[in-house]
Length: 240
Ligand SMILES: [Zn+2]
Image 1 (cartoon, helix red, strand yellow):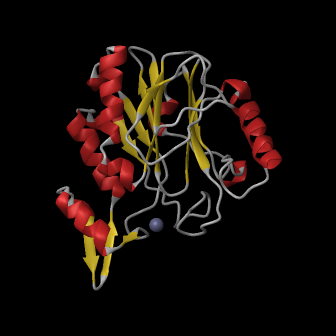
Image 2 (cartoon, rainbow, N blue to C red; image 1 turned 90 degrees about the horizontal axis):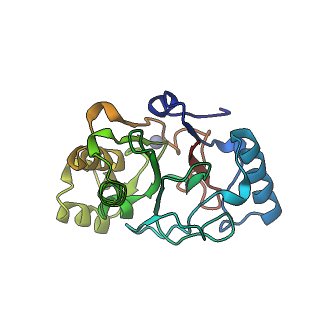
């Protein structure tokens, strides 16, 4: 697969977006990959999507629920430490990197605001989606019913086996609906959690989509569960 787009975001002419695939190469500097190779992949992607690599804002992702509004200091070399970024600036591409966690792209077409978020188990447990939606409404005066959300390829429940500890933690958080137990094994459905949180946040049913593509089942995407030394693919979103 060369490119992977959101059907929902495709219809907005003021947006540039993509979910990269394994063909775009590894985009993360913190994994075991040659820096010149990572920069080469970034340059290729910037050319393909039509942005200046220096203006790209990515994140030092820490599995938190922290959302940051993009500042003038943020750029390719100076990245914020958080798991979601939001902006109304034009021609500033936002990037979230993943391998099994969910890359989430947000867009308010009325107020012209975009955000990207990283939600793995920790982000899902910490309700990062709600934090992003709150930042839209509080900082940019968005109405939640206008916000469109695309959750990209991530690990499926069948591939996401978790231990007793996580099973108990999910139960404590009243997320039993996302748990399945088969014999001695537990599985956690992160998509089901994100879907519930999107609904509870007030995002309209017609305004969100959750990709059915599993990063571990499909070889088109990097998967940490498949290979601990893997690279990272990305969700990219830019206002034009
Ligand atoms: Zn799978």
